[in-house]
Length: 73
Image 1: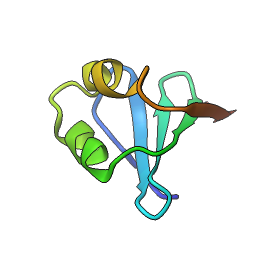
Image 2 (image 1 turned 30 degrees about the horizontal axis):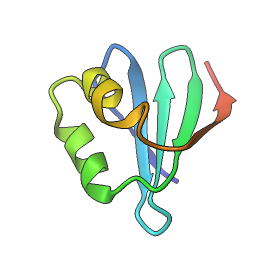
Image 3 (image 1 turned 120 degrees about the vertical axis):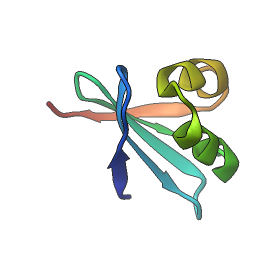
């Protein structure tokens, strides 16, 4: 999955696979998480949000099943 860099103090990269509805987020410090069954609109709204971290905390963090898949950086 390709990820794109975003301007955020907490999130470095965001990626989305619409066929599996999987969202990947790389946080500052290198932690990489994969979130499952995320609607594509949630991904689009996150990219459009003025604060990616606030959007994540409000809409994604406690709302979707996830797994930590790695750490880089």
